[in-house]
Image (cartoon, rainbow, N blue to C red; front, side):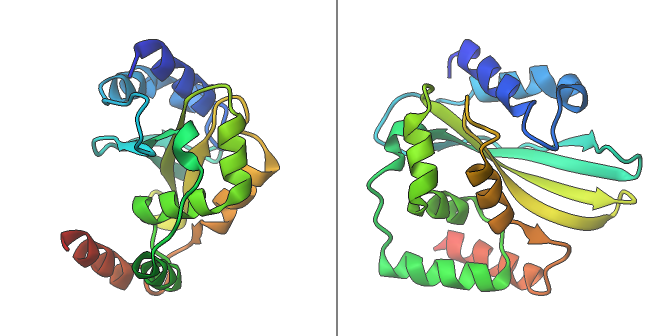
Length: 189
């Protein structure tokens, strides 16, 4: 990815609540380098995976910590015309029951949401970001795991925040560990 595009994406990400320029400033260069090192370019693919990453940032409350990881660079023009196979539909149903955060699953859910696809296609920029934000209180107790969808120029739309909230997993989901095992098994296939 070109460095100027990576800089734009990180600048937009800094304004995606609960993220701020202040709590991301120490990680700005790392995030830009991470995105710039990813081979994202216009193609027929919908996304490019980003190598595993995670940064710890302070929340507004002194006892709150967030862990941000960016999983995918999305190619906005490729979001449309998506059909979900019956096997993937079954997998999606299972994933939602077990409360799994899975980038593959979220990518499919994103493409099935016609409103989000419309927003992505209307963005003046070719790329968006999909990540995860895990929030902890008292530095150890998980409170929330939520997707972060950042579409440049339109990141604060209520529809995007609604999508993120609908795909969030509050607290420790009772089936989260079982779901992680299933997801790992599914990826091995």
